[in-house]
Length: 99
Image (cartoon, rainbow, N blue to C red; front, top):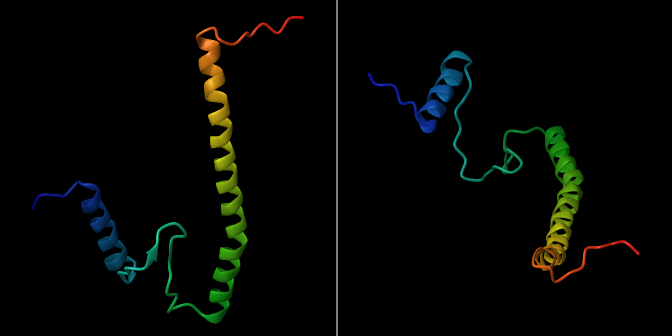
């Protein structure tokens, strides 16, 4: 039997190991959230766990918003900086800062 060494083959081998050796249950969800690495339906969580997930989502939402804002500001700085670099490169801007 030929061993599948592709990424998908390795993933299948690891999944099979977890299911057979560690008695894990393989589940397939179309609504799996890859960003937060959770199942969005949360059908098997207790109320306490659901409350904790909700708290984590709300507390990280502000961080994601701040990161997005910083990335937009970085883009605006680059839009300002790029023409300055081009002007300096072609001698259109004086970089002599002596009095």
